[in-house]
Amino acid sequence: MRFIIDADLPRSVAGVIEQYGHEAVDVRDIGMSSSSDEDIAAFALKEGLCLLTADLGFGDVRRYPPNEYHGIVVLRLPRHAAMSFIEQLLSSFLREAESLPNLPGALAIVESGRVRFRKG
Image (cartoon, rainbow, N blue to C red; front, side, top):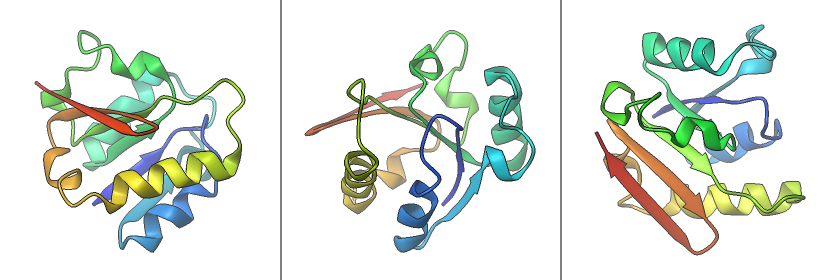
């Protein structure tokens, strides 16, 4: 699977994604660090990338209908989450065998101890 990482997550999450055999593109590496959410979502759609973010705005299914995307993953993080917590949360999500096949056309809200999927 191919992911685009939003600028609100640490750069180290790319390494976590790659550890599980997936590809990762960071918005900061492609000149989109200050791009609007709409531009990032459009790029993800055009390039066939699953969007990975901590921005709860991407969980608004009216603005970003999941069925139009190759997956949207929103990490719900505590206010001052440490990088190690974020990496661990993402790692547990990627390790789940059922998670990734369900992503295309879905929104996944990932929290500590729980993942919720919403299709179309």
